Image (tube, rainbow, N blue to C red; front, side, top):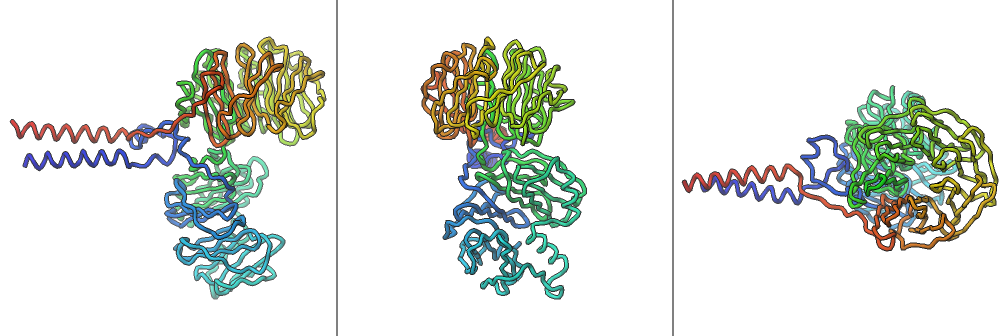
Length: 621
């Protein structure tokens, strides 16, 4: 008896060892509570495991139970997933044409894909293989709907192109969409077909969704669950809204990649949802669209990096995520809800106060502040105008934010961002960057076009100055030196602008004409780095009068840099790329992904091994 119990304990230990190594990682890269942290494997630099999908994804189809999903996109791309987008397998399409629409029947027995140059593909084996069908047109086909019998269907294309089939094999052009007769299909099915073909939801869904949006959407799409209570709204701006009451009310939620979204699908019970979009963006939800997590990198870029003074700890923002490192960039943790700003907008910039406790983060529609080192975040009581691009804060509580869509504005705060006044100045071009001198008297703002907005009296008065830049040049970032005498700005075509008088007279250098410079950072000794496209990284000395190109930290665009006088620095870029250096940029190390067994496996092994030892000891006794 005792021998059998010891053997059983040994078997359970072996099973625990196997489970520790084969357990898949958490679908959502963010830990959400103590139980969640115990149940799943411990991951380090979790974002590094997300795949890069190098094509735009244009449409999506999912089975009602969310067991399988297909995505189609550029260059004949067909992807299939059996785990809600966590992993994807490419399928052969036999074409290089861009694909724009897909429909799979609920049971997955047959489906169609349509795309450029009249491309039509059909599957009769659940999507394992795809065969071309003749369309008789070279127009772009963008949407397809086929009835449950796999015979009758419609295809919509550009320039009022319509195709119809009655046998699922031959397609003929028709004058327009012809709804099926009531004696061949139920009214409910006919209405769902009309909504799919015309890219519309029921009038009540569309009307309530429009009221819920803060502005006009760009190519909005609605996915409605079969229970007619749950729905998802996405658009090409990256907005996400969800409804749980039949479209009567819509709630905003964050797009973790801040990516442009082209298509969404939701399971029949409204629980699971999937969305795809530009640069291979894939995001998923397991709670009806309330919260979303990334299943690919989606070209999400590190928008800004800030280092805590005198340490190697720092912060980075990407999409809707806030990341923190405490070991000089070797390990990055994605901050969970409550420890990151509660916003559904893309995070744009982050600043850290001299004490390391005060932090500010700007999203498109608000400025958030933390007074406890990032443990908690508060929004503004009176936010700045919409579409914030950059901000500059001082230790005395004063600060300025700039932004705008078609035009630009400057807003200011006197109370560390609790309330914002303005616009205190408006201009005809979009402002992307703002810098302020340490004493708060000189302010420099720049952006699209060849104009600069500046103030020499702490924002009491403003002037606009033209500089000799191409109209296509956009200045992306700006800083002041530590004395507040010079302002430096970087932009397109390798532009480095240096001015001592708000742009009235400027020195303009083209560091590398083929590089778009996106970020500049100065250390306490006024040396610094400039990051740009194609991995371009420059070291500047003497406040920009001398510069040299450094080895590229990675191949992606360098979109954010931070540097200290001792040669330590961090660079971030597209596709959630990060790297750090200890030697002034001569060599770089990327954070490595690591997965350790889930904590529950250690408890399992301890319990069964201890029990086995006890049985063995009792038998010996």
